[in-house]
Length: 284
Image 1 (tube, rainbow, N blue to C red):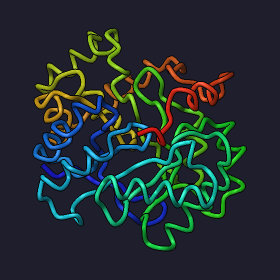
Image 2 (cartoon, helix red, strand yellow):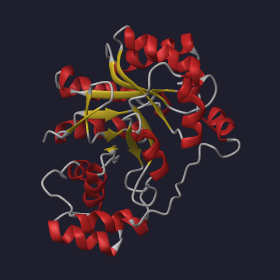
Image 3 (cartoon, helix red, strand yellow):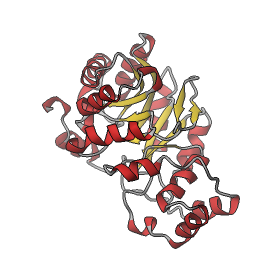
Image 4 (tube, helix red, strand yellow):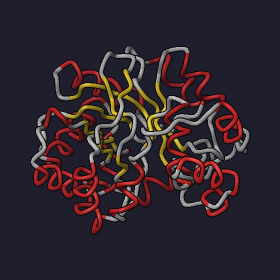
């Protein structure tokens, strides 16, 4: 099943729903292969997930032509800086077995962000990346760094789901036609969300599960959604959201679930120190 696409501010098109590969390394190969067999053409990984090689192997074994795929990876903190970013990209391309990436992101907004962004711009000009973007930038962090960029990011990948709808950030991004990409689009398995009786009722109306209703909501909101799973059937059903449409009342019901609070705050004290101490891509 071919998913619908969204046009980015650089003119490139991205499948609106992708497979999020932030899953255990030992599950990655089979899960990505299952996703590709189920019809996904957009795969989102990262150096920091430590599973780019497994993603690359699944891509190769799927035998799907490269031009039909949209592959994203992300630069980790140890490779920030203009020249270091280029080396980080080369490492990711080698592990993935690819000549270019469709989208490459700065994974976290710490350290030499401006230098790293310049490196991404250089590699975009060289044809090794089609689109460039950022991740985990709150409104304050966005306003700190992006005015220093020569190229406006195509996307900002952040935590987003019905309980945390990033309204301030989305309003800010809209000014430059920057699209929001959602990680934890199903609320990181939040039981209250996934058993919500109102969403279950909507699902019963359309013959869909709660996850499908949530992903459809996010799709209709114009958010690029990256559900993740290691279960073949759930991987498959997460993509089956293009054969129904939520009405205005249903959309507003889910919009009203927003608490304005997520599980990750990039502005919290010691976040950078914690990430650097716990994830070192050079040890993999």
